[in-house]
Image 1 (cartoon, rainbow, N blue to C red):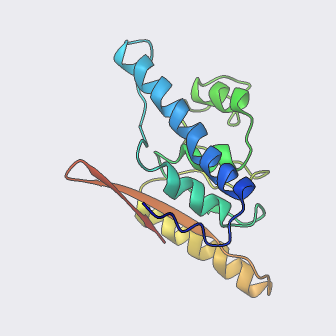
Image 2 (image 1 turned 90 degrees about the vertical axis):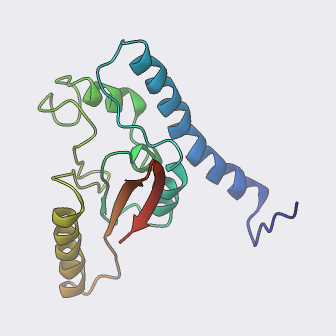
Length: 160
């Protein structure tokens, strides 16, 4: 098998691999806990880690990203502390939304992540508004909305 590494160094390839590996390890553990009945819900993104990680890593950290569910790689690749992420997931007052919800449907201004409001339609309008604000301010920035769909039980990701 031939692997075309393009211009990537060993260090860059390892960094990219780790950016996919961390969310996968978390996902696998959460699915075990779900099957054991120790947690009540988890929206798995297994098989979609590269989309969330790649989309996030392609952006400047100061650019806004609008993830949907199954986008754990967005949060881990924006370097959000895992301890606080899991406090958020548990609905803790010490989480990002101060216990107002128990999921990863939150946003964080410091990490330029816009919280999920619904599925793709409304998120696209927000991303458009962010992009328009950048254009009006003559900033060379983008906004990015990630959509994940399950089609016939096969994951497919679309980037908008």
